[in-house]
Length: 248
Image 1 (tube, rainbow, N blue to C red):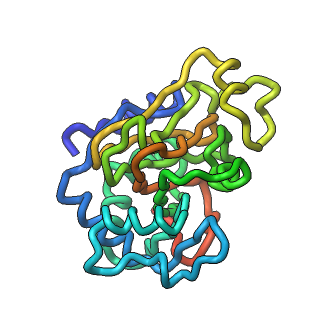
Image 2 (image 1 turned 90 degrees about the horizontal axis):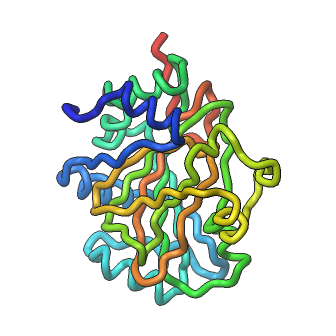
Image 3 (image 1 turned 135 degrees about the vertical axis):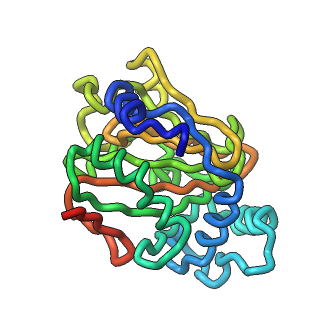
């Protein structure tokens, strides 16, 4: 709370498309992970695997769970988080700091919140599956105006899929990149002078306007556990687990 400067962060996102890195308290990390793995609303990006086989058991260590998913050749697993249930995560997302940031950047008093988690594993997959996993550059247009909160729940370095953002493309894209589709690395890296790669220890937190061009790298050696939360202007709820905040 002491380091969370709403005006500064809002201006960073507006100017570059992303904020500087912050970090949540260590005690939050374990709580968020435990809460995530209670979710039954998961989506597997590979056919032929029963849902019961990919759920984490209560006594299973996360490292063992990641290893089991890799053996099953699950390249990515996603799940939605119920924000209508009381939890530390819900309290965190509705804290004064984040609510004020949302109101400042979105210029509104009412907004929608959606939370999901992503487990990405170092599995050799065809190009088609990488496209399904959004591991090519793209940009989102979910709302008229929105931003996302990313929280790494394990250490993320070059080996396990850091998030990459192309600065200032949330406001200005080249004509060839104005279609909402996937783009190759060679196309994007040859078209823009800068790129921002986010790495950090577990608890690393940052914000980005995902109207800008971005992607998550495909992990090469280790798995990545990511919490992804979007704050969107107005009332657009993707599922029953989403939350609508209206101050009036």
